Length: 92
Image (tube, rainbow, N blue to C red; front, top):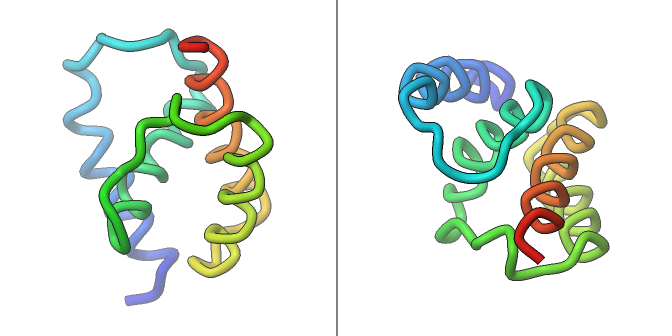
């Protein structure tokens, strides 16, 4: 399976569990998808990092760099960045 297929499967599976979870900041539909991407792919190489750990510029650069390595589309990278910077802004 390719990265795109794996991402689709992970997003569907992740979405099943997210409906019961309401803690944390309010997220738009796009930001929820970014959270799903983050949780589905970013822990493949390392533990998930608390989004509040870095500022918006650092998250944008990381999403672009590692999103490219994961062969995410530019739209998926933007969605991921939207989630990370939103959660960072809410908590800082």
